[in-house]
Length: 314
Image 1 (cartoon, rainbow, N blue to C red):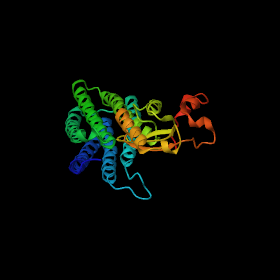
Image 2 (image 1 turned 90 degrees about the vertical axis):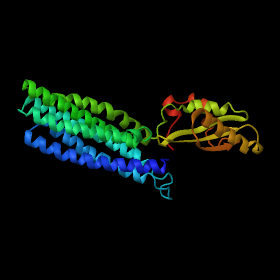
Image 3 (image 1 turned 30 degrees about the horizontal axis):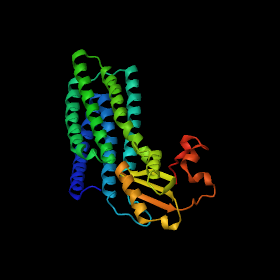
Image 4 (image 1 turned 180 degrees about the vertical axis):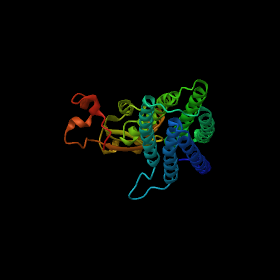
């Protein structure tokens, strides 16, 4: 969980980012209309999408602190992941839209004023970079804030690209540079948004978290004396910082072998070797499955393809 002081600081920074970004949108859209610049207008559109992204990030940041309830037993931890997914998805769509209009403008060039474009875009670059720096520290540990950070950093790159194109247009008079730079910036946007889209989608699909091997976890637990095998093993993340593990552990012997000491050994070993501390472990002397092949992951591997062995769905 985020410390109260850090939470307040992040909320203040997100609120300030919203206000600054709103000013950027008005300035760039107005300038783009007056100057007939596809670069400025696409940057304004991109910033407008980012305004929604910042609202989502702030809302998710606020709601994620609410406690769990009977209807939401995990609380609202995934609110930030959902916001990150939506932000990155919208950003990818925005990149497609910018590319479309830039290509269209290449075929139908329009004269633009490079000097005014440079001035407006330079102000936008400074503001966007400032917002990104405000969010940088929170982005290290929070996928939701990281999504907002990459949005604003991408905006800064877009604005810098427009500054460069304005300068080149001023020197050469070649208006086609306006849409050409937009195409280069599209690549930058996709490069920043794709990893966040992929990571948030993996969390929503309850995939095994990166760097975690279910087979290695099973082997580690089975190496503890007194344990016969591990089955029904599932590992997923509610959000990147909250990894959950559930499994059935069959022990050697009768009911007297089902001890708290053995359970504590399992928990300590998994926490030490894999950093997973939220475990639900069912100890049993006989497998509860009617089909005995499911009682041993190694035997199950002989009957199914690897992708089916460690199903992550409940």
